[in-house]
Image 1 (cartoon, rainbow, N blue to C red):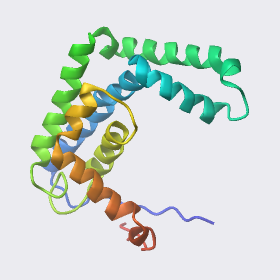
Image 2 (image 1 turned 90 degrees about the vertical axis):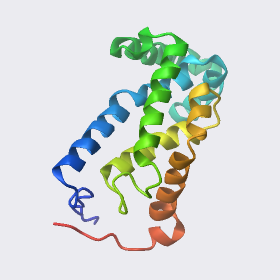
Image 3 (image 1 turned 180 degrees about the vertical axis):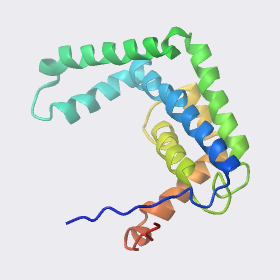
Length: 179
């Protein structure tokens, strides 16, 4: 049986560092996030590809034509949620500016440090890793993706986190437990 381990990545952060981490994590989760559905559901060329991915994930045994109505309704729901959040009320140019500003802030804060708060990864690094990867790894086109890909330190951070936590070497190591 799998035993749950308590790991506190932020145990060594000061109160000020924890505050900065919280602000950036909320920016990523509540704002930057909306760039992902915008790119996948709103940009028609990307939607054509992502629709096939959705069909395969949700209906692996069903033909595209049979699942088409559900997938199109799913798309409308996501775009409606984006509108309800507020991000979907902006023009494409404004959404691009907003999300790119988030990436610039992350890039500026990371600067030349290996991790956002210094020498060790924290919760902010884990959060940023997941979201940055969802922008730069899938095969979609967008000015937002181009912008993110040109923030070399964010791409290097993504690769560093992958090596640290998802390489063959790291997957064979035990994780330290903090109480």
